[in-house]
Length: 191
Image (cartoon, rainbow, N blue to C red):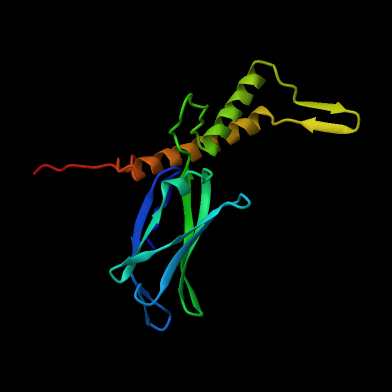
């Protein structure tokens, strides 16, 4: 399946899929079969149905800009279903990431492009600064309710984990953008 793994809301998205075979080796081609992608996310009543048009023996798909404009940013899931008469075969499924549209009309609204790991890291670092400046109560009781906050050692451990997560995300982004793996080391030998 050639559906993109990342799209941006508001963009026209196109891809092509080749013909395939069923479990018995019989051809599934655009001449006899209809191939449809069903896209969904964890928001109620949010989804899209994309039916392919024939392209050679395979299919070509288009998500119109007007359709993707309504996509919420985040993780989406898809399944590709081939149908012919009463036969229905799921030939693939997976996930894709929808990035928020950065276009706007009039005045731009606020946009936070940080990942969840980056947001969490910033929050942990703010909590560490608050503890170091003496501005945070570690534990308190109101009536029968008790609240205990992280102590400095726990926050420092969490900060280390989140820094590693953010670094992995940054490396994956570099690789996805064709800038190579920053962990690769190249050596040249001269004769």
